[in-house]
Image (tube, rainbow, N blue to C red):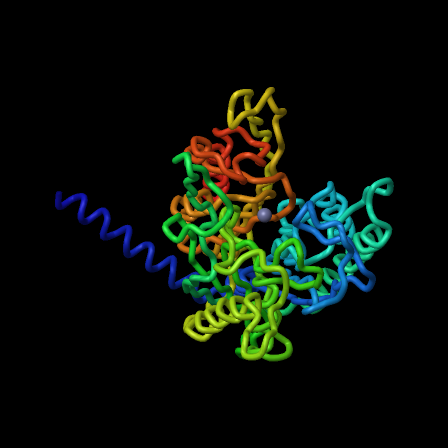
Length: 436
Ligand SMILES: [Zn+2]
């Protein structure tokens, strides 16, 4: 025993000597410092349609937009460490449906020589914005023009963010908001049959976390506050014809107003496939005397929590290594017999993107993920804080956990995936996080 003690003691002395000699060797330490510097650049661009457009999110709505309540933007934060980048893009849009994810991503990837894993191209899922289309046969000319213009604007806004890269410190905070509610409501009809309808289910699972990432210059000047929250941006329904960012867009605008010029506030939609705002699918902004229109009320309520969390972030850290990874899963489709499927549906591919900056993790999923799945990924993540971001780098449809296939409901019926797909996604996402 004593011999072992002496041996380990002498090793400790040796380690101290090596450490002290390293401290007096300046050059390797300097290069380590420059390697450790985390830089970030931010930019924002207006993407409000200039012409009336077909609106996204409700198939039955065929009219063109008739005006604007609040502007739509694309917000970018580019992080860089030791030549490695992470480009986070939040657009006030429904999502990259109709095959638009790849051409928009490619435009940015090619222009800036970014690896696929380094780009999170995300949408806040507002149902009061334009539909994106590249279909020259079926797409409305104004929407075709809008989508082409959006591509150019995304390249422009990423360029501007890269141009103003500078050293930053980051801080993270967590809050909770009641704005989102589980929407899978159990209804029982006159004959006693039960079914799951879109409505409000206050007892259903809901990820209420408001995760906020503060980005500031070393002198304390704040340049961005990113936040992640799980709700559909659907205070407004299919009868609304006003352009708006809805609850998440209005929250972004509110926080930017409070934090002042020079700060951009990109929102990211968490796992919200079955989460709607507390007030949902309303026909318009109700402005009768004394009334606060519900999208504004809920956007402000969520925005205030973002500001509370932001102001409570007391610890900023410098540096942060960036790691990223990207994979495309080929997931099983629904077999015949499952939720009244008449025949087998084909496999569907799904993009998953993972990244970390120091000990803050990001997982981007290219579809509409139900809240239980996002909560499972967060719970199994090896990181204390994990941004689960949906509508990211793809738009493959709803992804529901297996047990909900028993009761069905809208998300399960319209999902292209088989019941086992969600577990495969959780496992792969968690594996990617562990391997970063
Ligand atoms: Zn949706």
